[in-house]
Image (cartoon, rainbow, N blue to C red; front, top):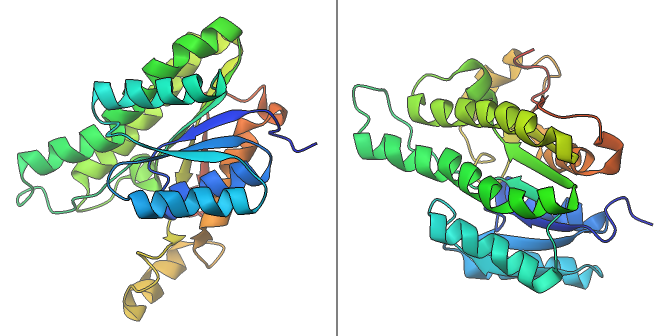
Amino acid sequence: MSVLQDRIAVVTGASRGIGRGIALELAKRGATVVINYNSSPDAANEVVETITAAGGTALAFQADVSTEEGANALIKAATDAYGKLDILVNNAGTTRDNVIMMMKAEDFDSVLNTNLRSAWLCSKAAVRGMMRKRYGRIINITSISGVSGQAGQTNYSASKAGIIGLTKSLAREVGSRSITVNAVAPGFVLTDLTKDLPEDMVKQLIPMIPLGRWATIEEVGYAVAFLASDEAACITGQVLNVDGGMVM
C-alpha cells in the first residue's frame, strides 16, 4: 500500500512549477489530489490527466485563494467530492520584485495577499474539518527568502517570513488534535521559469550552495510528501529547507 493511500489532498497553485511537482508526487504515493488553479485551466487539466493516466485520482478546481470566497469554495469542493480533507499544501504564490524605493504599494499588497493571506484563509477553512476527525497535515511552501531575506524582495520575503510565523503559531493551536503544520523552504529550484536564466547569473549563484547545484522540483515534492505522511506524525512547527545547504 502506498504511504498516502486513501488520503485526500488539496494543493494550491498546482497547475505548474513546484505546485505541479508536489501534486504529482502526492498522487504517486496514493493520495487523491485536488489541483487548485486561478488562471491556467489547460495546465491544471494536464496535471489531472497525467495523474489519472498513471492510475491516480485527481480533479481541477478554479479558485482565487487570496479571497475568502475562493479559499472556502476550494476546501468545500474537496470535502464535497471526497467526504474529507487530510492534507493541505499551501503553495500558491507570486512575485513582484523591485527595490523598495521603486516598489509600489499595490505590488506589496498583491504579493502578501497571494502568498500569505491565501495560506491563512485556506488553513482556516480546512482546520475545522481536520479538528473534528482529529487528523490533518498542513504543509506551507515558504522560501529561503523568508528565512534569510533577499534584496529586491521586501514584499516576497515578508510574505514568506509571515508563512513561517503562521506555521509555528498554527502548529501550537492544533497540535492537540493530531494535526501537524510544517513548512518547506525551497532554495533555487530548476523550473521552466528559471532554466533560461543567464549563464553568468547561475555561475554567481552556484558557489553560494554547499552542494553545488540547484534543487529539483521533485526534491521539493519528496519533502512535502514526507511531511504529509504518517512517518512525520511527531514533526510539527518545523521549517525544512530544500536548498542544498545555502542558508544553514
